[in-house]
Image (cartoon, rainbow over all chains, first blue to last red; front, side):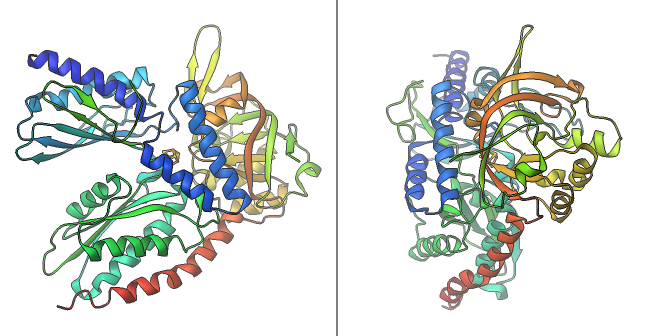
Length: 300
Length: 203
Ligand code: SF4
């Protein structure tokens, strides 16, 4: 396969994959929502969850995007150092987004700064947003697609604290983000917490945190404990689905960290909404693909 | 039994409803968000659709427009709080009785709901296909020059819902009450976690 053929092939597959991922929740998120539904007791919470599932069913049946805000497209990529087609990935993803805008269809959401006009195909300056990680001695390309809707982007924030503020600052910051603007972001969400040393790395880590598959934990035992404690604490606030009284504002809390500067503590918080449209797809060097990690028994 | 409101809505239809009640709407529902509010309230234009006794939906739909007809693909609520600055005046001017959106609204809207007898209700965020399935057809479209999400789409709806009463005609405000409760809980919920990490900086 020459580069041109590879680009066309990758763009075609990704266009279809985007079409799938905006209509169907990944298996782990769907199962988690079912689990949460069982634990809510109030009538209003049950009605909300039933509407969530009714909507998800209808989206599949009618082949329509499950939420009208299909967001902006983000791609978090783990690329093996030996993957052959690294050079065409970015162009293929742009093409896939523009084509999926028509074929899915996606809502037209991208506006370039200073021009302030809708680009009408969801591409634009540095959009789709692409984040690369290189995996040594590996020949696969793993792409995580995420649909960043406006409601769930609004509560996102990052701040740098002094060491004297201690770990307490992290906890207060997470609670503030969730209980303030989070109410309008369609809870229950996956809360991503990034711990770093400046706003930029804390923010990126918070994003990587909420993209993590559900059921995984932070590598350090204390990090994993903090995830559990924050989940329990946030879910004691009395906030449920849609910000109305209930038992669960969060599906999970995920923490990701980097080393910090000895003189700073930085915290980033990103939340997803219940419509956590995040899917993984993997390619080998023949561009054969597999997305069973997120969607079992489904084809495109 | 399902409580179903029918347009045109009279004061007596809604006076006994309370925050937290679940209702449905049958009749005519018209979209209007930032631009429709601005035109009516700030530019003093008369809405081509007469909202008196009617229902407004804070939403921008995806519509497939063809020569023969307009087909609704999906429609979901947008955050109502963006309309807070103009909603009270909008209620007063138009006589609208039912406002549907997502998330809370403020004190001024609650006051207007009390004074002029109107409701603000929540439709479940993100449930755009469910919402579209309760729309029988698009009856008309006004102010199309505002763009697809911003113009007035006049929708014939059947048992549109579930709608959760967020502000009732007595001025009670569910979201505002809840926010206070959550804020009270916050300190109590944070406390044990803060306690558990207090020695984390020590080596
Ligand atoms: S917060 Fe999520 S589910 Fe809610 S409207 Fe936005 S994208 Fe849709």
